[in-house]
Length: 399
Image 1 (cartoon, one colour):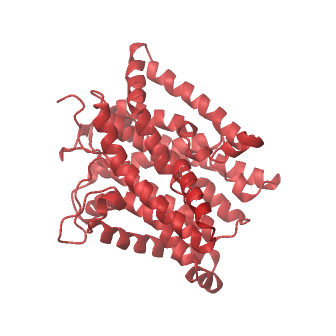
Image 2 (tube, helix red, strand yellow; image 1 turned 60 degrees about the vertical axis):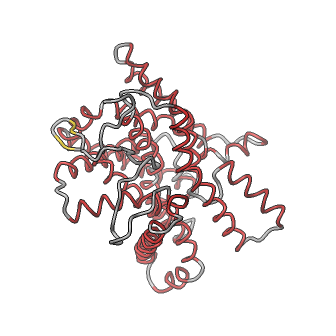
Image 3 (spheres, rainbow, N blue to C red; image 1 turned 90 degrees about the vertical axis):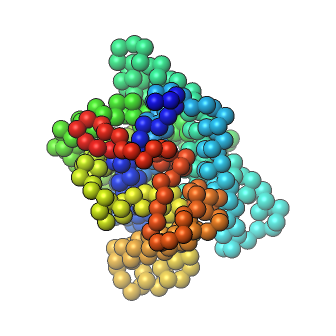
């Protein structure tokens, strides 16, 4: 194997990515469709707020797994990554900044100033922070990989690194959730979600898991009861803390804040459970319609992530308001999720077959033919940018 060569496609990641993106859409719709003071909606959002942590763990896992045998050449790595993530980020930031002007018009000079701030902070819309944090991680990745590889020099070094990182994350979450500074510090705190340091543990978690991918797969395969039990216990703890916070006077939005220490064990548990589910699927996948649907969904997921807030925003202009008067909050939420997913997939499919595919979806244009044609993505965010189509075998399973 050549230096920095890919180690093959990790099929378990496909299902993990699809399920996490589905949860992203769900949490956005739950918080949009339901009133901000809805306690059930806040409780649902509490459990769905693992998504950003899962994505950053997944991003680190994929990159470290690919380059675990040797670091990539820095300049070409940055060039590819920033082209296929940075260009869509800029274009969609412009699009969403323009959409905001429809409902909140401002003078041209103010609009340009807002666009500049949006580009710097990832705040053109509520989901674009993910891209700017990802690009920060790309910038730091050569040093990050060196740190992980260097931790092998002493006994248990990687596990000490993970433990220290977890303790630090608890402090970060407690500070971001509990502190309310004023002045410049207060303004900066408003952009906490757009800073890579806010998620350092999950990046380390994904990186360490990638370095021990075979052992991690074997462990989750041998201990399904432990994985499920941890999911139930940490989920109950998260919901219990949420209800306690609401009863103590916090709003449902504040009580379900993603930056809380109680979220760390829940996020680890649900990421582990989704990975275990992906491993089980990858062992049994046989290339049938189900496997094909997962692979296509994984390939389209980044585009759906970029597009779905625009679809949801369009629905809020009228259809959702009418729907909420006809059915219950649960019914309107379920219908909104189904419609948003379907329309977003259709939009992405059209974009993938257009000359704008690369700059709008971060993926190369799909070849003519079936609307479900899928090519293995290269160098795209959150994906295994393998040049090889051969699966990698880890432990007893196939990934």
